[in-house]
Image 1 (tube, rainbow, N blue to C red):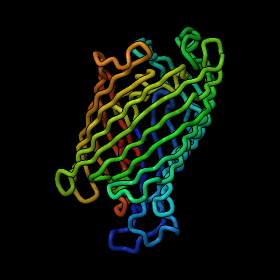
Image 2 (image 1 turned 90 degrees about the vertical axis):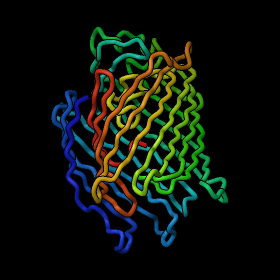
Image 3 (image 1 turned 90 degrees about the horizontal axis):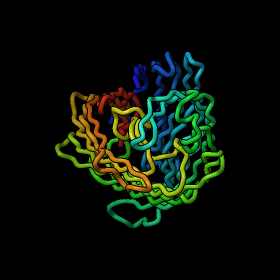
Image 4 (image 1 turned 120 degrees about the horizontal axis):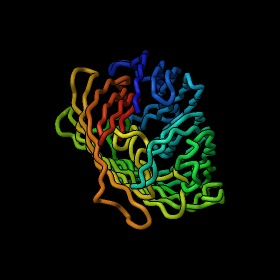
Length: 363
């Protein structure tokens, strides 16, 4: 997917020697162009904050919320609110997303059964909520949390290619589906900071139990699926301002999930350089690395690479068919107190490339 975006930035955050603020807000005018949307425009704002209850606690993690609205020449609408919140001296942690999307995507097939890309339209509200409480407060090397997960997505497909794979009825959820359900989770955090760690480990383990997908079956019947996944990142300081970041992700699915809820490769976080969902299947495993380097004052640079594999019920992972991507990018620190970065990455995959402009690191 071709993506050209321009972010105007104001309020770049307090200097290190000024009085700390509990709330810092960064407005972001947004303009971009893609073949699916043509010209898109809108506005977003990212806020970093600490609650009054945590005043004076230098170990309290900062929270982040982003609200954005965009509209396109193709009359597409995106309204989104991703968030991560730490509260009460890091005792509680929640993250997730609420949004509504009227959009178009490309579908490339499932697994190794590639099809010529199909453009389809979809309207859907989406809610993803993960709420945790710290369960081992005395752990010196990190914080362990346990909690609940919930997801809801009403994926109403409005347009498909008439003779395409989605219209054939062979793809679960190809004519739309409603996804509801939840599960359990563990979260371990031993990073030295949230937005730009230089050392430590963070691990997010999730189990979704028999989530229901209404209308996802071949004949429109309901289906159920369970998923076990682990997302682990480690950070290694090689020099005072040089960091090697590693990310390991695995996902295993049992049952019948709609195609939009399968394990995905591509996008802003996993294998940058591929369109999000360019590769999808029941199971996935990804290994990524990123070298983060200082350039000048607030400006930094990165080089990154990764490899992933997919699998299904017949073969857990097809290690003989790996997907690889690599690239480079720039970073600009918009909040020096918490080292929150504006991220600009260009990734390359096999016969594929992508430009990504967003707030925060990929992992």
